[in-house]
Length: 253
Image (cartoon, rainbow, N blue to C red):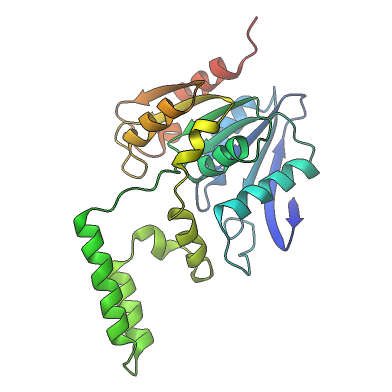
């Protein structure tokens, strides 16, 4: 199924037909199918919605560059159209950026949030990274005067760009830069929903130190750490993750 708003289109799937609603916000890229285990575990007791962001999976590449606020407002429009109210949100990585803004900036009522290895804190550049960026910009400027500049620019990109950047469709590279350069750290303290943070201790994409900072900023939150897990902790420990989520979201007597 598809939802369209302001020239953007997202593919989504719906499972179950219960009163309680669960909205899954995947990470960046084509990662919707990585949540099948969670969906199958909860679909008999919840109505579950999960999406492909513009440019990934079954959703078309957007014709314009986007910001994280554009993505969040698209999800707000989606929730409004499908009458998704007070949902339980499960978010991973990039999805955590949206979950953060839904609660903190846009004040969308959310029942509870499960935030798994989420992004949103802009890492400080090391001296090596700073010098690498400077060198890339200098070489790009120099090669811009050559006849085969596109050829050289492509080589420079392969040498200097991150794997995440190179994997993004060309049409979305400015969108990618907009997102990773937006520091959402100040927003976390304004989250009002009850939150459970699940983190892999060995996560090298969104380090555990980020999870600890976020846990300290969100008033009503708890942090669970998987000692041997990395960035996709819910895939590495599927049964444990389902049980933890179940205990967190079940209705207390």
